[in-house]
Image 1 (cartoon, rainbow, N blue to C red):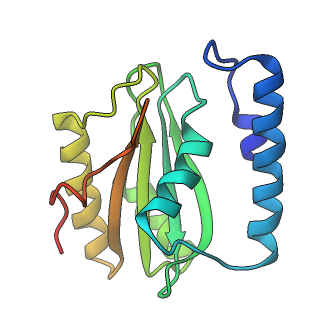
Image 2: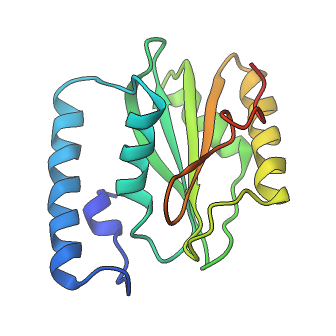
Image 3: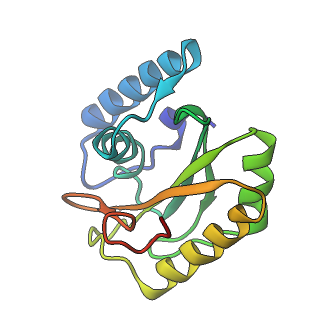
Length: 162
């Protein structure tokens, strides 16, 4: 589903602002389809994910599938939940990562309430995904949580294996 169609009505943005965001996302999608897009730094990834996940009013879990040079192969929202939870099945993430022939992934989700502090269940899910993907030779580079303000990186906190 195109990101522009994923935007939920939001009390955070006016209708005009949501239209502008939708147009910007459509342009980004077009650019991504034209050439490989390198996720060259944590800041690039954070900005990209903030654009896609911050406007959402329900918790969404997204995976960025990357090649061995960290160029974006594909991005998918693998789960859309409620205002404070979503269900992610590691098996499905592994299947999609293999389908895209990914060398690495970045996983991310939003906290629509605004507080990007990782919960214990966020850390548990991260561990499960790291272990499942490691079994097939795919690295999890980071798990980012998007809320108000700066996204939280579990890798920057040292909560992912090196």
